[in-house]
Length: 410
Image (tube, rainbow, N blue to C red; front, side, top):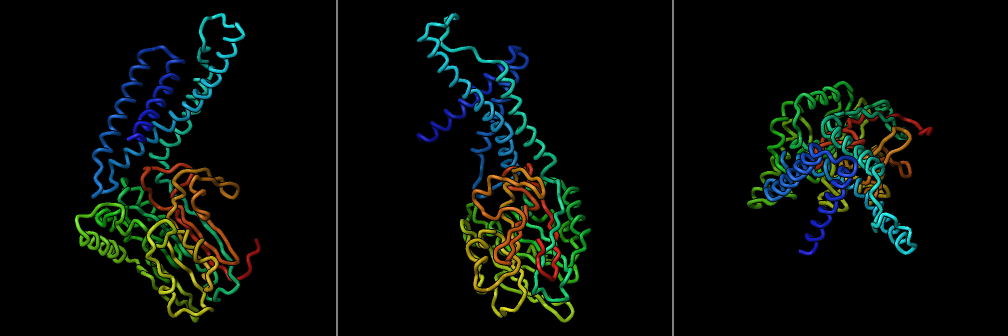
């Protein structure tokens, strides 16, 4: 109960500071009254949506809109609060000094708010507002093809130049634009890769979320070396309340069958040998294994029958698996393909120079390529979106990796 009191007090404080900023720069009622009404309407809608959240359904279109609205309205107001709260600290100390030195000619303990600072605060708040709004309208479907070339001295000769297209974290239950999804599928096909892999999270929770999109994803061309997939943490249906264990298991079986319906070979703690001419490589697929999530992945079982000399590509949804088990494993997995983090769908990236996201404080490997003792992991930034219905800075990704025989010259 006490934490709710603190939370409500905090929200009220933020709202008051935001209103103070507007009131400082204008006294026009035609601006202030609509602002108050809109703020009140947003608060009422958010409260209503949270009270209507159904644990048996989980995330749906309304919950996506709600969280997007919370971020869109509250984060800019937090920025304003930061500026004005800092100004209030200055005002209090200034008032104390002038009071005891007897230099307060105006007779007020606190100096007036500075209009300029309120203008700066609102200008700064416009940055996250515009960014979040752009992310919700354009960024979430702004698909990027990212290409990476990796060199391995022990890559079998006939696989020199082989291309692998990776997608991850589809989260089909969040989609709302068939044309944009078809555009992304066309991008995948344009790569004309030799292998296509999907590293988990086909839905948010329920298998039926994918039903409207099966025909679209089935259009992904099956290349000469095949299409393969693994499960992600959301595919186990563990984030909602089920009527019975049978309902949960039936949903899980239906999710697994979705992969068959879109012509992907789902690897469940198993491996397949991919032949190209006289050579072969091993593609290993584990179920989800996350340091802080479900640990259904069994690397030992998935690697049964493999030799040390085999060239191995591992599909494992959660990159923490690589950090805690794979990168120093006695068996060498040359390349691990993961997803899961989405890059938090929020951050700053200048390709080749700089990338940052709050998620990097949770995952050591969170977006792009990482290496340890000749072993690589590539973390795909995700195809879809979840929770926040948008992407800011960290854009949806289709990865194309070219395998080359030889030493890395970098």
